[in-house]
Image (spheres, rainbow, N blue to C red):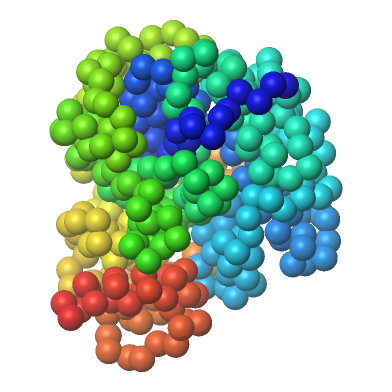
Length: 402
C-alpha cells in the first residue's frame, strides 16, 4: 500500500473512558474540513502491545488475548507490566502476533469505523510502529482524500498509550476526554451491557491519572496534550471547539459544532450513542446530571468512595461521601450488579464472591487512609495505590489542603 501519511500531516489521538464523549469529540474533529478521524478502529493493536510486553516479562506466550487492559492498582506484578509498557516504544517487534488474527479482531471490533474493514489486508509490518503507520494509511484511504491534512483516531480505554503515539509521531497531539465517573457508570449501566462498579471506577481513575500525568509540564509530551471535560464540551461547544483548534493549530470551522456535518462510520448522518435519548442530534446538557435519577445513594456512595481523590482534582463534587470517610456499610456490603446482568466477557475477570468484594474494599480502605492522613508513604506504595508517585503527592496535597 502506498504511504499516504506524510510528515506534514497532523496526527490526532483521542482517548478516554467509554461513555465519556470521546465519540462525540471524534465526530467533531472528523467534521473539520480536510480531516479523517476514525472511531475505535485499533483497540486490538494496543492489547497486542500489552500481550507482547507481558510475554517478555513472564517468559510465556499464552497470555489471554481477551484480558482487558488492567487498572494496575495494588499489585507489584501488575505494575511491573505497566511500567514496562510505559518504558516501551512502538518500535518493538510484534513477536508472535499473527496478523491474520489481528485483522479479524479489528474487523470484529470496528463497528464505529466500518470503512476501514475492506483495507485491513494492508495492515502489516514487523513492529507496532509499522502497524500504526499502516493503520493511519488505512484511515486516510477509507475516510480521507487527496486534500486530507489531519488524520487520527479515537481509542477508548487507551490513555496509557497516548505517550507512545506522541513519541513516535513528533507532529502528533493527544486529547484526553474526562467525564464525571457517576455519569460514565450510569451511561454504561443504562446501556444494558453492564460491568461491575469497582471495575468501572478503577478504570476511570486509571485513565484520569494518565491524562493528568501526560499533561504535566515535565512530561516528555506535556505541551502536546489537551484535556477536555465532557461537561464543558456540551455546555460550551463553541468555546471548546475554538480551544481545540488553537491547540491543534488549525483555523476554527463552524462545521465542528454543526451536527449536519457529523458522519458515522459508514458515512451516514451520525446520531449520538446515548441510551437516555435514542437517536438525538445536538449537544445535550441533560446528560450531565441524569445519573442522579439512575442510582441509589449506596451506589453513588460507592463510586465516590472509589474515585473521590481523582474527582476532586477534576472538580467533581461528592454528594454522599463526607470528609472522605468511608461508610462501613459500603466496605462490608458494597452494592453490585447482579451476575446475570453482567456482560459475558467481563464475568471471568470480576470479583463475584462476597469475600472477593470485601477484599477489594479492604484495599480501597488502605488507599483512602494513605491519601487522607499524614502518614509517610514510600514511593513504591504511592505507585501501588495511585500508579504514579507525583500524582499521589499532588492528590494528597489537594485532599489535605496543604
